Length: 252
Image (cartoon, rainbow, N blue to C red; front, side, top):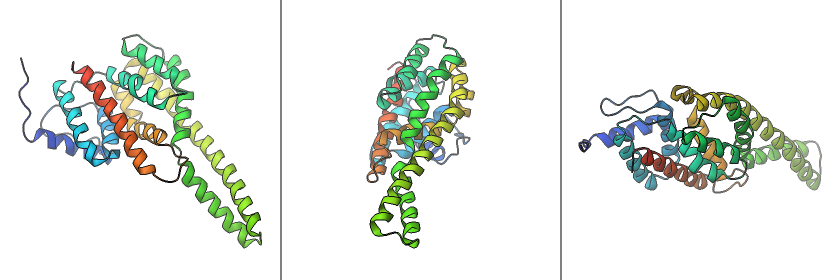
């Protein structure tokens, strides 16, 4: 039996929920219509908020239609499908091990938490290293070091040399600390959620932030100009892949 057409208010309510999720208000629930798992609300909110508005509308329609066909009962396998078919291939080198596990899990194979953790930690370290705002942090460190050097009677050439060296050391150390900390914090929690297929546990891992990290890593943070446009394009590519995974789950 075919599903009745959605009401005229259904899509606007869905868009309003995406707006709320993009602002971090995932707990807001629609007054009518199918509910969605919190992990999906977080992912969709992050990617909706980052996309170019002209492209986001069509993406939201695709996402809504797939969720409506599923009546809100989105299987956790969508998480594995999205990571295996979209996230890992886009991020490329360093994600092969995680992609292989997501492929196995998407086919119904049980993967242990230890296997997940061993693959996730280096993969997440690479993601967060690439997501770190390197260009901006380097510029700030160099400016501060240059100002200090000039107030301490360095010549112009010496001040520039000092600023560059300090910024490289400072920013490099911060990137490493940031990447290591995020990988250690998230790898074990995600490993447990993936191993058990626990939707609530995955939502508690803050996939909103992880989706943003994926987009930032894809956008590249070592170039100072054009970051906003690259980030929007990255959110669009990740979002299209998520819509594809939802459509596959819905049988399209």
